[in-house]
Structure formats: C-alpha cells, structure tokens
Length: 196
Ligand SMILES: CC(C)(COP(=O)(O)OP(=O)(O)OC[C@H]1O[C@@H](n2cnc3c(N)ncnc32)[C@H](O)[C@@H]1OP(=O)(O)O)[C@@H](O)C(=O)NCCC(=O)NCCS
Image (cartoon, rainbow, N blue to C red; front, top):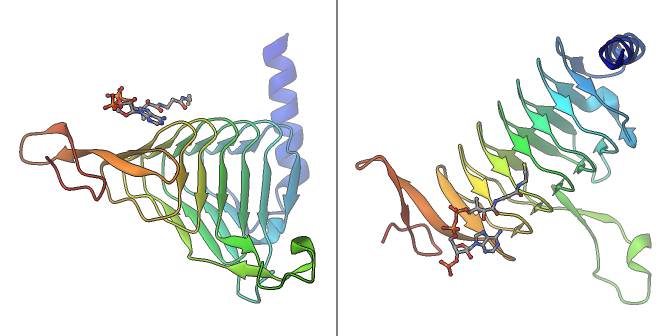
C-alpha cells in the first residue's frame, strides 16, 4: 500500500513540475519541498533525489546569471538549504546528510546604520561540490568548493576550497586526511592537505 502511495506521489509530482525547471532529469524527485525559488534556473539531472523540507533556490539577487545544478545520481538529505545567486554545481553522486547549507552568497554587512537583512546580498565565490563527495550532518559550505570523493565531517563549516580526495572537519574546516595515490590508502595530513 505504502509503495503504491509513494509511486502515485512521485508520478503526480513529476507531472506537475516537469516544465517548471530548467531541466528535470528522468527518475528525479523532490520529496515534500519546503520552498523552490527560481526553478527556471535549476537543473536537476537524472536519478536525483532531494529529501523532505529542503529549500532550493537559484535567484540572480547579485545581478549575475544564476544557475543551480544537481549532478546525475546525487542524493540530497532532508532539511537542506541550497541557495545560489550565481552558480552552485553539485557533481555526480554527491551525498548530503540532513540539515546541510550550501551558498555562494552572504548578507552584506558593510553598513551599521541599516539592519543586515535590509543590505544587499553579496556575491562570494561560486561553489562546486565534486563528484562522489559526501557532506555530513549540519555541514555549511559558504562560497568555497569541495573536490572529488571528499568527506566533510558532521558540523563542519567550509569557507576555503578543499582539494580532491580529502577528509576535512571542524569550523572552519581543516583537512585531516588525504588519499595517498601512491600507496592507495588514506593518510593523515596537515591542515593544508600535505600528507604526513
Ligand atoms: C569525518 C568522519 C567521516 C571521520 O571519520 P574517520 O575517518 O573515522 O575519522 P577518525 O575517527 O579517525 O577521526 C580523526 C580525527 O578527526 C576528529 N573528527 C572526526 N570527525 C569530526 C567532526 N565531524 N568534527 C570534528 N572533528 C572530527 C576525530 O575526533 C579525530 O581527532 P583526533 O585525531 O584528535 O583524535 C566522521 O567523523 C564524520 O563526521 N562523519 C559524518 C557522519 C554523518 O554526518 N552522517 C550522516 C549520515 S549521511
């Protein structure tokens, strides 16, 4: 019975939303979206699942052309908040846990005579999350990129780029392990990513 309800929900959602997005790939589905802003700028490739109560947005608030891309086979957790004002790209088979925040912008705070919420949104660096990477629970990615097959530990805040095949943890996130391509194992590293 549950499977039938799920299947009807999936088919109904796809039918209702098939022309809303820049692209909605085959078998992709958003389960109970909290909010979708700028669907015409959002490209969802094939086999993508986005968990419940997530807010995804691609709005050109900083005057740039804006795009949010979900790569093929990515799985996005519940309560994710992903907000692009220029470009955020999630590669193929990216996995995010619950309550992950990804953004390429900030609230401007240059002035102190105006509430921050009334100041213009500020563009920071574009974000790329590399193929095969995993973002743990409560991770925040703010104007920085993560390489391929990386792990970002639970509760980490990423504000600097993380290279391919790294494990990074903490706020701000620091690299703790890199994959050694010579020995084919993960090894401890300096916070800059040099294998020890
Ligand atoms: C990042 C993670 C994968 C590391 O696992 P691991 O390779 O087994 O790492 P280790 O246990 O060897 O830890 C290495 C060091 O990093 C620290 N560390 C690990 N995860 C951390 C985190 N999230 N934040 C801060 N420090 C962390 C450990 O305490 C340890 O410190 P020490 O060397 O001073 O003792 C794991 O801790 C994690 O955060 N997983 C995410 C879980 C999650 O969010 N799941 C959601 C389901 S999709």
